Length: 239
Image 1 (cartoon, helix red, strand yellow):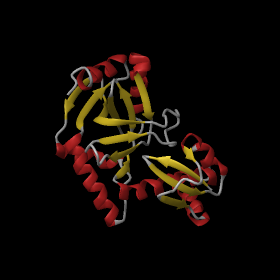
Image 2 (cartoon, rainbow, N blue to C red):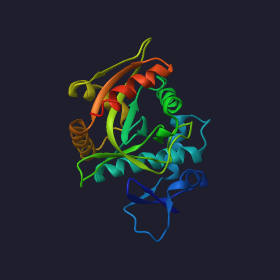
Image 3 (cartoon, helix red, strand yellow):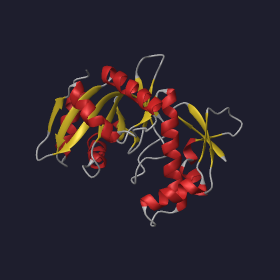
Image 4 (tube, helix red, strand yellow):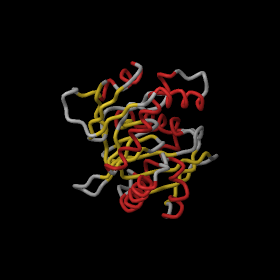
């Protein structure tokens, strides 16, 4: 058993394998700290997950997947959801890049790092948490241990200002999206719960997100100009 803190919530995890504790090392807190959530995955659920993922995945790895899924679903009750995307912080602006698998969001984040160096902090490269902030009405994006194969991320947060949907293309263009376009795309980048209560909570969060965050579609290639095009629009213009 160990405890971690994600998106301001302390979570107690009863693990079967040491892999997930090692994965979460940078987020661990003392076992005496009061916790809001308890997570434990049964052996039966782990075996089911392994059958779905394939025999090449160890039970220890499957446990880490199941644990984060349960954390993400449970945190909806705290107005927090997981995004399948990458989040960076640059010059006080939090920017999320969402894309279909294989489209190149990690490549795009890498371009930002090349273009701007230490002015860019990668909060999470794959599965950040996004939480509504009651005191300000903003959304904050948080790092998590589940940050992709590049292991880009940190135990930090940023106020989320912009979400960009990346589309592979020959040139580099960026345009604002309307709410109906966003709704058509964003559910592909979320963990959508089966339970109606949780689904309603997620829908409420998305409704608030549409009011607070600017959304863009970015058609881009894999050249440095792609990052420059987005930077000049979402940071250089300082909406």
